[in-house]
Amino acid sequence: MGRPTLQEEEKRIIQVNIRLTKDENDTVLNYAEASGMTPANWIRQKAFTGRFPTIKLSPVNASLYRELHKVGVNLNQAVKQLGAHFN
Image (cartoon, rainbow, N blue to C red; front, side, top):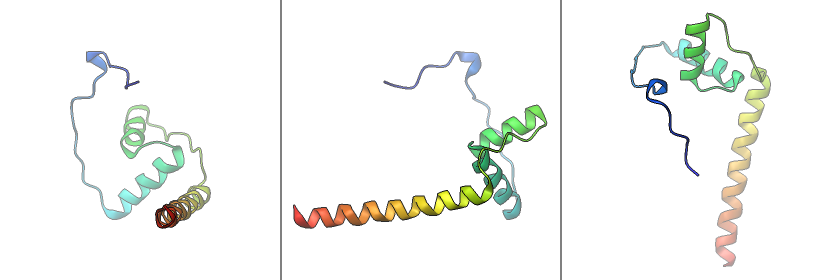
């Protein structure tokens, strides 16, 4: 099952490039992650509504989630390598 096709007027075909400082980029990434959005969608919503998108995760919870995800990835890789030795 693929992605549903968009109507022609719904397709995003124009690209706008902006330059950010490292600090600005970190801020956008943190806000986007806390809102559960991609940075592009976060910027788009902020630009067109003038309001900050709703924060779904606190930055502390988002940071903790990222660390737990990294631990899980490492654990999965170790188990996969261990299983390869026994097969």
